[in-house]
Image (cartoon, rainbow, N blue to C red; front, side, top):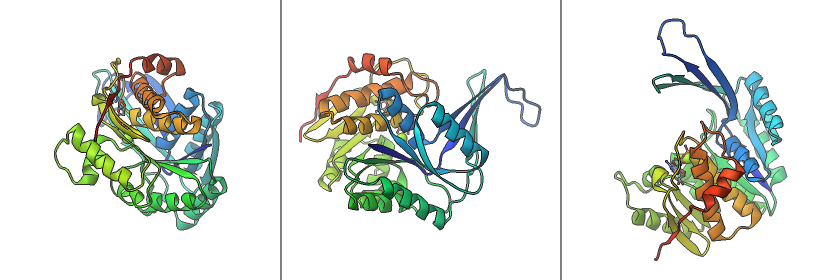
Length: 311
Ligand SMILES: Nc1ncnc2c1ncn2[C@@H]1O[C@H](COP(=O)(O)OP(=O)(O)OP(=O)(O)O)[C@@H](O)[C@H]1O
Ligand SMILES: [Mg+2]
């Protein structure tokens, strides 16, 4: 069973206008809404891949209810803790000339009581055979050690954890040895204190060091350059698949979904790598964070190339 945790969900609102007039009246030509936030994006992709997950986290107000409804429509099970205030609506304004302006709301502040409620809820699900996907930023009021603390709690119950987070969240969480991590290149360089573009070999060495500390799988995503994947018993470098790019936003989330789904299905390292590359490249072909279809992913799997990385 897969549980995704989204501490900071959002309605992703996309509006199209001819050209933005600051200080003037702007008429919107087209508007679209979707439920977003990293964990929720992972749940949506898992659904497309043919799997199931429970989406957990915090929701508030009308925006929260909208997210709950969107998930229901997509037949994704939700189990959210309701909080005071309004879940974020993040607006992207697309102009005809390709310019994008983003307006992000702050979202509710989470008190200690609500966090305890979420932890209790998570622990109701924590047992062997369950994977918790912890991804994305955290709302105000939440300690930066939160992912570390949750990983420790679920590990005590025999459950597993997949981490996709940045900065301090990532650094502290590593102390609890999550089972699977998916840093992108910049996140891993930041963690290692490298202020230049690291070579694939250097990224591999840093990732290998993390595996030696007890992390089972390290997937280092490198955007359009592909990925370095350290999987049980096998380390490979995969060039990115050649696709018509629409939006690279959410490509990382699709790789996280592929890692979680592969774990759930007990796929071997070769099949896991194949799915990671195909799902993430598929996400690039869709608009915004929309997940790729199963057919697209199956088709893209045929393109995947793996180069073994030696010690
Ligand atoms: N232009 C591209 N063409 C093909 N595949 C791509 C492209 N960009 C990204 N990918 C695929 O998606 C994977 C994840 O991308 P990336 O490293 O950008 O993740 P990320 O920075 O975590 O993204 P996000 O957090 O926005 O979801 C890459 O390893 C690669 O397989
Ligand atoms: Mg990412």
